Structure formats: structure tokens, C-alpha cells
Image (tube, rainbow, N blue to C red; front, side, top):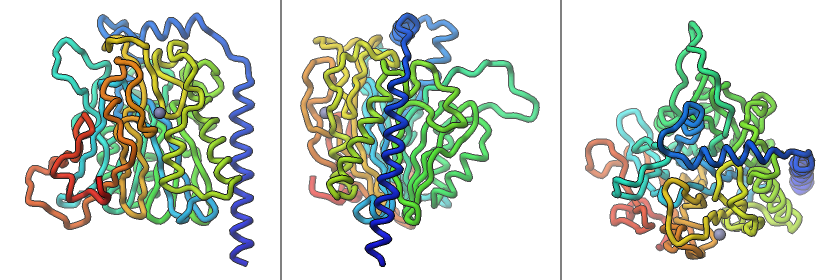
Length: 422
Ligand SMILES: [Zn+2]
């Protein structure tokens, strides 16, 4: 009977994935072309000084840690090898923005966590960062209760600034929300409860949530409210994929046109459909998803040969899941920076682990000199555990402990959180 139920669950998941793939493919075939406005948008994105009001609102959208990403979540028997939930992610940024791993110790009523943080890796004053990040902000993380999350920016239409209606509040900064999620929430339900009680959040994100009990949710938050797009569990196994746009029926009308999933010129549709293809290939071969298969998906190079200069969402950002964006130039131009995958992660909430790969998960070195730091790419995951409840090291101040550097080096203090040989 157990075998029959497992086979039934497998068929159900396969049917769901086929439907999702079909929907994605159909959207690809819907004609969409507006090269004039999209090229104009790209020119605006390159301008980091003397910003016009419209440009400022677009840059507001990009003020995010680990901004442009591919996310995949999976859970349940017949889907993941252990039946537990997993989240995988690429972190795509300009190559001068780097992620590093930090571990935050429990303090007072706050849970501890291990996660990634983003930082502009230069001390040159003439290189102005294209967007701001909040020191200490977590882009991906898992806490000591086993709640994990990863985010992908949803490029929404700027909302008209008509003033704050009576009884409403200014949008809450996502960095404040993510801090509360890691400090206070134990489960996906806790995190959804937190997100759904905030009327507006900035910037907008697709948030992948998973917990130690095998719950998984893909929820979208932003200026227009919050919508739960997908929910899965051990009793209701499934896979979810997020890229840089809204997908829920409640919010997908608020995407910036250049970001829509069916806009064939951007990289959202092709990365999403490639992710679904890869999951389906694994399932057809009878393979269940685990950290290793997630690594294969995050290393995928389909569509790498498409020209990053043609991407209307962000010029010089590539089209493959493992993203090798470049201007094919010797110098890195901060005002027109190429974007690509600066790290890849897999979160395993049941074990409270963050598996982290600096640079490209494929392990390749830089092909062009504008792909700064990428020759330091690891060819493996290093696994870091979340600090446990009650764990202290005697360090004061409550500041997170940096475990890696912006160049991908391992720091001595990482040893207490590192679970694998490096
Ligand atoms: Zn690669």
C-alpha cells in the first residue's frame, strides 16, 4: 500500500510539473516584442548618476540583497530523496557585489541563523554602488528553529506616489521583515502570518520559504500586497520555481512589462522553463531531488550562448541558470556592470544547514576580465550549520560572525559552524 501511495504521489507531482511546464511554454509562444522601450530601459539602468525620477523608482526596485536570482523549492515523498524540504538558489549580482556567509548567534528572545549577506567589494571611492544594501541583511538563511528562506526580486511596476492613504502605512523595508523572520519565526506558517499582516513591503520579492517539518511556500510580497502562489508539504508534495517577476494570479498584472514571464527577450521565462525541464528529466529517470541534483540544476548552462547585451531586464546579464553575464571586455565598468551568479546556495531546513558555493556552481573560472572575482569560484558546496538555541561563543554585541570573505576565502571563525571538510 505504501508503494502504491508513493507511486500515486509521484504521478500527481509529475502531472503538476507537466501543467506548469505547459503553462510556461504557452506563455513563451505569446507574441511579445517592444524593442524600443526595452532598449531605452536598459540605457536608463546603466545611468547611476543624475537619475531622473522614473529611474530613481526603478533603482528603488533594485535596492535588494541578492537581487536577481533563480530559486527552486521542493518537498515531500516522491519528490525529494529524504521527503524533507529543500530550497536552491543562484545569487545574481554585478560581479563587484559579493555574498559572504555569516552566522548570527541566538541572543535574548532572538533565534540564531546562518545565512548570506551582500556587500560592495571595493574601497575605491570612484566606484559608486548601483544599489544600496543594509549591513547585516540576510538574503538566504536558515535559523535555529529550522525556518529557511531565499528571495528573488520581483520587478514590479512602480506604484504611483499619491501619498499614504489614511489608516495605511509606508511600505515596510524587506530587510526589517527578513530580520524578524530569522529572529522570531519557527515555521512557514509563522513566516506567512508575518508577511500577510504587512500591507506593503519594499522592494518586492518572490520569497521561497521552507521549514524543518517539510512545509514549503512560494509567496510574493511588494507594493501591491502579499499573495501565496504555491504551498506544498509532506502530505502534498511538490516543486516551485521563482525568477524575477510575479507569478501569482493576484499580482502578475503588476509586473514591469520587461520582466514578465512571457516576455521572450528577458531571461525570466527561459530560466524558469529550463528549471522545470531539468526537474522533469530527473523525475523521468526515477531520481529524487537532493542537494546533489539541486547542484546540477544550479550549474546548468542552457541558453548561455544568448547575448547578454540583448537582455532588456538588465543589460549584460546572461540567460542561463548558472549565469555568466559579461560585456566581453577587459575592464569592469561600474556604470554598466555585467551581472552574473556570484554564489549558489542550497538550504536544508530539517538539518538547519546552508550549503554554499562561492561564485559559479559549475566551478569554472572567469572567461572575461570583467567577470570580477569569478576565478575564485568553488567547485563544491561548503556546509554551514545554524547556531543552536542557547549557543554562545563569548562574543558580545550580537553582530553576526563572518565565515567567508568577499574573495571566497574561509575565515578561522567559520570552523565552529562548518560541517564539511573544506
Ligand atoms: Zn556556470
